Length: 345
View (tube, one colour):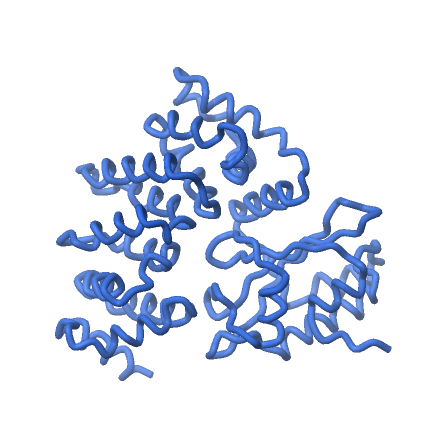
């Protein structure tokens, strides 16, 4: 009997086509090559969240192009390597329930086994909508029925407050196709007029997408304008920054964040968005040091500890965090906050 060592091996043995997506911080495609390296513990999981890898696996066979979906949550060790025992346990449950044919309809008993799989999770609805949109794009399938009404809403200039017919699936379908046709141009023209009921979920969908410079610039303009608001409950900046997060390695976004960190004060909400979504823009010592100095100004010890531990967990920022810990230029407040954190361990 063939020994099944990895999830990748299981999918290949079942003669399935498959796609993989990270579901932790954002909804992003994972290459098969990267995932195989993660499974073999050759590299740490690149985007850990809460000590776990949150992974969506869409798989299908040629005779049935409609994909099946597994939403898998696997623990990581302190080095952010995949917990091999948990992964093997997940495989054992699947094999016991379905054997090697992953796409057959399970019996009632098999269905019960699958439901009791402790490694399955249910993501937030907005992430599920984005995943559904991305899978359809990957498989070159038609978008949902909600896309056309959303495009009509964006292009009807006198219609901004009539958003009640806009569906979240239409928003995520549009975002997943932001590089298609003239979608980016349509959004650039509509962006200044969108009410928060549409803008906020749209920003949540855009966080999973890279897009052209014209849209990056338009979002930056709206972000800067929103910072000037006198409304104490203003949530626009954090959502607009979130929309830029998949592009946080772009020079224009990095410049924006550098300018932001030069301000006297930054809200806790923006700092949380920067660390949780835009960590790529913090991947140099000077920028991350400026970020930490703002974080200690909030004077919220649990928040500082939580964000510090989170950035240490991300492979891209981990070595930069350690450089900041040792930097002679750090303030006394930052040195004390770091010292207090490690005294608790």
